[in-house]
Image (tube, rainbow, N blue to C red; front, side):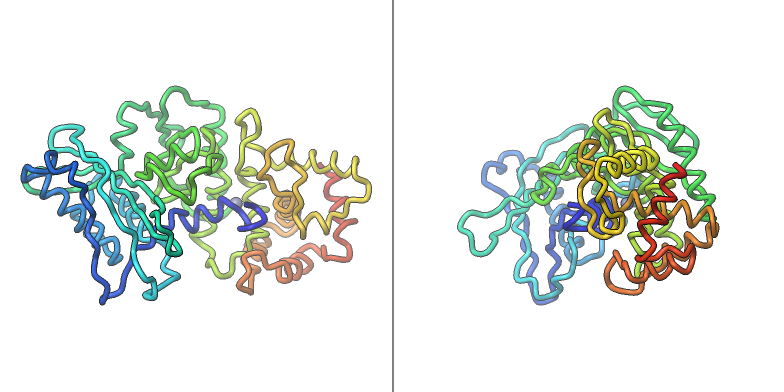
Length: 400
Ligand SMILES: [Zn+2]
């Protein structure tokens, strides 16, 4: 995934990958949720019938791109709205989209007084296939009180028996145990990164999850075709919420991206530099075989071992081609990000934070990995360029 879409977690942050596009233009007609006959008995009372109508209304609003806030339960409202909005998908196909997904009611049952769990399936006919493709199963919680209907993600309901503890500015929500040492490391890094970026340190609600599939379920996605096999990712910082990577308490890598996104314009952000600084100030994002976050220093030592065993290795080639050399630690790790991390440290040491801001904002092309302008800025800041790259980098590695 590193090679095909730069950085998987970056993509996760930017394009929550459940691309259920069912936006439509004015002249298209909203297709209501299909209700199989088996539901007739369960849906015969007026409350149930009204709820289903409201679910249709909600999806109509999502498709139109504007969710009425009065429809959303107060608790976790911002997150609920964000996730529901993303159900609409990425609008790069615009109004030419020929059809939206067919929706079907899959489950409907009460879970408490006036509260119901509702599952909707999204099916599509891809390239004229005879058998529809199941794209997503999405779960919603709906309450019906005094004729007012409100919706929420299953998050609160599914975590209602979880424990909670606050470490620094982060409230951790977890099933059984929390590793306080890691949580304190995250707290320290949250303060450190925000201080370096000169922006206020934020508070987070941090849900400890075993894998990406568990995160998805908490957010309503019982199933999503695009991410059906994803499990080692977390869910990027959104609306003050964090969902962990493989049950690890330290999410500092993406917290760096989050803070950077607050002060840096996306079109200028060079992701060569972003990944370097995120790896240095945060961590490598992924966990090792023991479930521990991988720190930059550990990977620098692994790189030095690699160079010892591969005398012909060329650091410029490793940086620009990004071959897999850390599979023995974690398959997603990027040598490019490790080298960018070493360069980021040198920029910070020699020029200071203003140098970091310059290299972070060095992108001038469409490509998120703008090598030309990265190298140009790198040369201006610390005199490293393609011709002296191997020698200078070896000198830097020797200081670790
Ligand atoms: Zn990253």
